[in-house]
Length: 231
Image 1 (cartoon, rainbow, N blue to C red):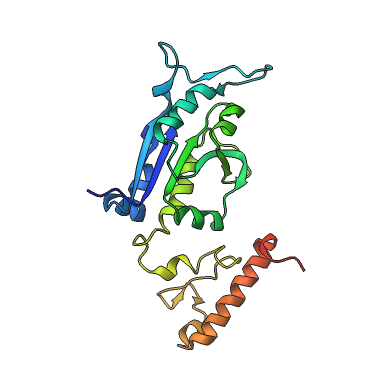
Image 2 (image 1 turned 120 degrees about the horizontal axis):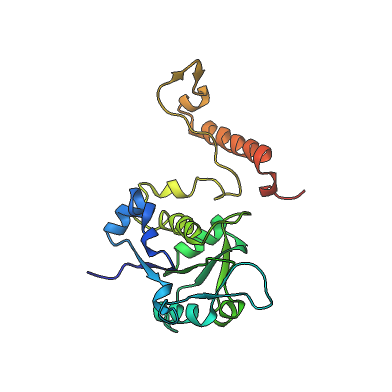
């Protein structure tokens, strides 16, 4: 079997969380067809001592524990040799927000190495020493980076060639053109007194495209004005 062209490796203390939802639906089908590959590696395999410790108390005091630089560096080196072209990502609430442009760039590359933090965080020295790019999926804090890693990989995998049914499916969605996506409708034509807008039934593709653009702009102004260019 040939190696999947897009490879994802996840470093985590909970490898059983993967593939999780990525083993289902479009991503799961693509995984089974080797459109992409996923390897979940246990950071604790590189732990110290009889109990395979991976963390220690924070220097300077404070609550919680911190993932050790030496342990995590060994895990990264074992999973990603020096000639590995894949970006090394660390899921972190202080990272740069993940957006569709970054997702497209990642999906167009060879894959990703994703580090899932736990506890209070990761020793800063390994972030610098192994060139980890911190990535956030939102302004909130989770128990660990695993859910963020699943979100990031799902966003990338659905854009890989052969995963979605129609190529246009990925180009007409929210954020692709700087706007939220326009409303969608399907059968039945009337439901609980609400009808499909007549313009969508007209067969005039030019008018339909114009209506969809106007609706996308309206939704964006109402819900995400920050996406609109500053005037």
